[in-house]
Image 1 (cartoon, rainbow, N blue to C red):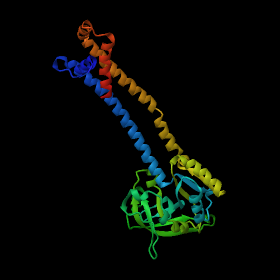
Image 2 (tube, rainbow, N blue to C red):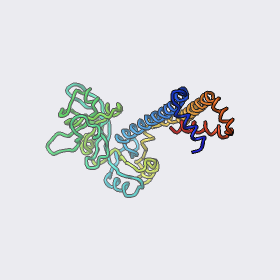
Image 3 (cartoon, one colour):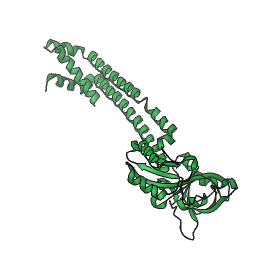
Image 4 (tube, rainbow, N blue to C red):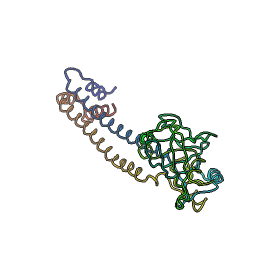
Length: 328
């Protein structure tokens, strides 16, 4: 071991007679550590928030949604589903759906909902992950009431629980003639995602029941498409729209919820500035610590110089101390 390393180690491990140096060393290490910890925590919170928001938004919609212009119903959905899966690159799964506004009535009150009908066999929704009561069951069984899954906040306002009966008034395609469809449902499950936009409004049932109540026959409102990687969503949306033609049009989740994702991106912009400030603070901490060490070791430096130590050697001693503090 060179004399510079030996002396630097000795200074870092100084005992009672040089207690101030040990204290300054500890403060320097803690300063750098706290700055680094603050940055890691801030980045982790922001990353976790972004991941959670993206997962829930995508789970209740999808990476890409293909809809009809002016809410026109889309026919031949079985053929189009297979065509998208077989012909478009990056597509993981495709699920047709029917989604429209409706009124829901319980014994207590009446409220507005967005009723979304999903194919139980081809259901890519993550609502089942957030079930807090009952079960996620939207399948239609012969001779029984149709099932519906509600958000907790909506169920609370309606005063219903699992097993309760509710009546849904669907606004069909012939609404101008005053033709409404009324169906009774049984609440099979209640979910809570933590996002008010969904828990307050969204209700889920089977695709055939939604087609019946909205008088859509054998048509659907659109297709939910999951892609991999997520960055290919815009390419897939354009390709599907071009392939299926009018009245189909595709939009990505980033276009639909532009405000949310723009806000998340805005939160990321100060990160380089914060990182730079923390680096500056850490550097000042280390430099300040070294300066204080140098001042307390003035006599030692004089002794070392008189014994033949060079300026470069003295410099190396304190540089080694600084690097050790920073690395620790």
